[in-house]
Length: 489
Picture 1 (cartoon, rainbow, N blue to C red):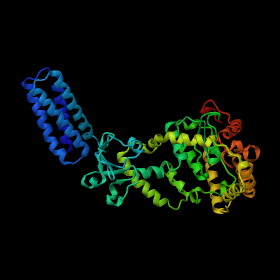
Picture 2 (tube, rainbow, N blue to C red):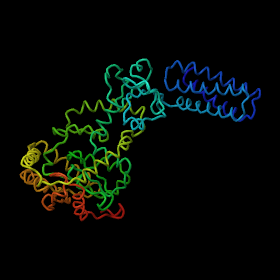
Picture 3 (cartoon, rainbow, N blue to C red):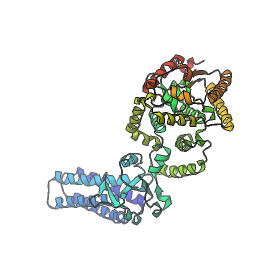
Picture 4 (cartoon, rainbow, N blue to C red):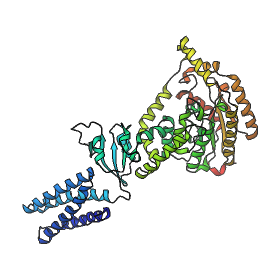
C-alpha cells in the first residue's frame, strides 16, 4: 500500500465508525462491520509500523489499544453507551492519522534540541505540511519521554530513522554527523537574519502587524530613532529608523515601507534623520556595523558594499528555500512577534535611562572623548560621492510621490559637541545647502537650534523618552496633515 491508499483506507474506516456509532444495538450487521474495520486497521498498521515513524507508531498503538477495549466491551455485552464511547475514542485516533496522511506535502521532521525558544520555533512550523516525528536531545534523561505530546529520543537514535529534515532549535553539536542537505539550522537563521538586531526586529514586528495607513515614515540612524515619540507626533507615523542605518538603508527602508504599506498614497511625510558625519558613513563597510547588513537582507534583499555578501546571500537562500517547504507563510515576520516582551523591555530601558556627564570622572571623560572622536575619523571621498547620489535618489523618489521630506539633525549633549568634528559638520552642511536649493526640502537643525540638558539623554548622543518628546514637539510644527490623499498638492 502506498501513502494515498493508506489515506483512503483510513477515510473508509472513519466512515465505518460513524455508521457504527449510529447503531443502537450490537446485532450481526454491527459485528460484521466492526470486524471489517479491525481487518483494515491491522492491514495499515503493518505498513505504517514498517515506516518507523515514532509519532505515527504512537497513534497506531493507541488506536490498537482502544479497539481491543471496544472488542472486549462487545464480548462482555457492555451497555451501548460504553461501546459508543470507546468507538468515539478510536475514531479520534483515526482522525489524527487522517490529518497526518492528508497533508499536501509530507515532510517528516525531527526537532533537534529542547529549549525555552522551542515552542516559538514550532509556532512557525506549518503543521499542514509537516509531521514532527520526535524531539532529539543529547544524553536524554530516562524520565524525559515526551515534550508537547511528541516523543523524545536520544540523538544516537536519529541515524536509525528515515526523515526529511533535522530542524535545529539550538546550535547542533557534531553537525557533520548528519547529512548536510537534511540539517536546517532554524536557530542560526533566525538569530543571524531576523532578530540579530533587536531594533530591526522590533520595527519589523510593528510593520508586520500594522501596515498603516500612515501619514509619514521615519528613517535614519539611532539618533533619530530614539529622538521620535510616536505617541505625541502629529498623525500616524512608522519609525523605520534603526541604529547604524546609513543613507542607503534609510532610502531602502522607506521604499520597502511605502511599497508594502496600506494606502501608500496617503503618506505625506518622510522624516530623515541625519548626523554630522552622515555623508562619510557607509554602514555596510564600517568595521563596527558591516555585519548588520545581513539583518536587512531577509526583507530588503540588499547588502550594499558588504564584502561578505556573497557568502551570506548563499547561506540565506539555501536555508530559506528549504524552510519555505515546511514553515508557515511569512514565518520570519511571524517569529518576531513571539519575542515582543523582550523587545518592549529593551525599548523601555532605553527610554527610561538618564545621562549625567557630571558624574564622569577623568577616565570617563577620556573614554567619551575617544569614542566621539573615533566616529569622525573619516575621510572617504568615494563614500561621500556615493551618499550624495543616494540622497538624490531618495529625494527624487519622494518628489515623484508627492511626499514632503523633513531632514532632521537631532540634538547632542554639550559633551558630545565639545569633541565632535565641526569641520565635518560644516562639510555636511555645505552638501545639504546645495541639495536644499535643488529639492526644497525642510531642514530642521536641532544640533544647534535645540539645547537640551543631560537629563533628556540616555548617553552623550542619544535621547531618552523625555528628550524624544521635546524633539517631537518641534517636529510637529512642520507637520500639517491633509484630510485625504487627494489634498496633496
